[in-house]
Amino acid sequence: MRILIVGAGIVGFNLAQELSQEGHDVAIVDMDLDRTRRISDTLDVMAVHGNACLPSVLVKAGIKTTEMLIAVTEKDEINQLTCFLASRFEVPKRFARLRDMEFTSSDAILSPQDLFIDQAINPPQIMVETILKFLETPGVVNVAEFADGEVLLREFDVPENAPIAGKSIHDIRSITLMDSFLIVAIVRDGELVLPKDEDIIHAGDRFYTLVDKEFLPFLLPMLNKTLDEVQKVIIYGATPMAIHLAKALEEGTRDVRIIEPSRDMAHVAADQLKKTVVMHGSGTDMDLFNEINMKEADFFLALSDDDENNILSALLAKKYGAKRALVITNDPEYLPILDSIGIDITINPRLITVSAILKHLRKGSVMSVFKLIEDAEVMEIGVEPDSSIVDKQISKIKFPKEAIIGAILRKGEMLIPNDEIALESGDSVILVALPGAIEKIEKLFDRKRSFLPFR
Image 1 (cartoon, helix red, strand yellow):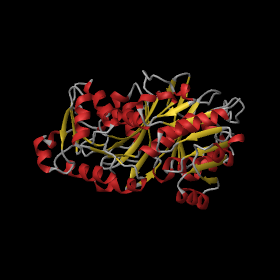
Image 2 (spheres, rainbow, N blue to C red; image 1 turned 90 degrees about the horizontal axis):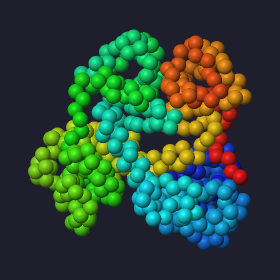
Image 3 (cartoon, rainbow, N blue to C red; image 1 turned 45 degrees about the horizontal axis):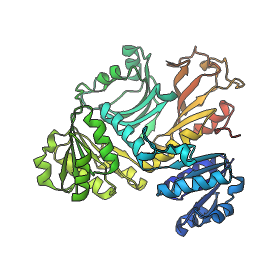
Image 4 (cartoon, helix red, strand yellow; image 1 turned 90 degrees about the vertical axis):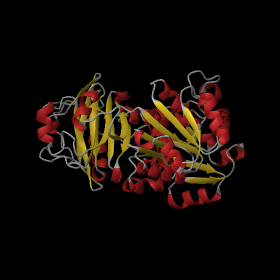
């Protein structure tokens, strides 16, 4: 498929890399010469330097034969205009990143379709939904969803007092019957391993589990004896996203406070919020931290647009007693080091945007992919009627050792795999695969990743 990407920033670069690796004919346009040079030097895609709002530049990038346009520049206006121009060139499918929630809210005056956009991706909205999942699940450090939200992937810390600490996978299986969740990966000393029955969960580990969404409340007491509900939340940065999040938290009658360095932005936030206390000050003001009693904070959320201030304010908040800290960092290069310096949760909006776009694009065999550390992947794969594994028992399938089946979704019901279960046409299989097994898995299911059909 021929795909044209507008915007060669982090999102555009990652999309171009992913899509070109999957065999698609990709072109990318950006006004920044350094960005297009970098892409030309590192990726097997056509990079065009120029203004994508000019039809001549789009023609040079091959829009006349493009089957899909993905507009992911930093400006909503450019993304909207390029989608409009693409509609004039009869591009069948048009995706756009829109940061302003006015365009994607339920009460929007104009829908994305009115703006010639088939699918709008709103990073702030995705971020708010993601952060709410963190706040609602004690101890969780990573979240993802499969099977249209019926099956949850959650990564948890194992604290010293966790009931499952010191128990083997077999012990946990015996206690719980393992009918609604399965531990599919353990992270120890920065290394991810696929667990065997005899492997023991230790305090200090992290592990990934696939769990039926209805069973999640019953799983949490096994992970942490003290399940204190999040009541006090302190937010650094009165960004539009932070204001939107605060409004959602107000509905749960939580104690929410926002610290904002800009007096003008603080006034804007205060005018829009009813219960939230908005305070003018810096994220490194120790007197302010004492005034708001940081040691009672269940969660400190650093949500400003400044990565360095987010990191510094979160570290100070932890020092002053905040139980957990979440940091937004726009630069993905910060991600590997933040965990080692005491940040509980880190989120990169740009990488989340890439995942959201790919999730909307994919349909068919590989319906969803979530990347773990060291390039391991959690994959949701549909079992096609003509697949060689249809009606075969799991024990009879030559499954690679570097992968593990975590769950099977059949007619809306989550099944924990065992050797006797036979895969049926229409099943969705959710599995974890280390890098060396990914290609083997795709061949086993007889199909490569496919995308939405166009007519």
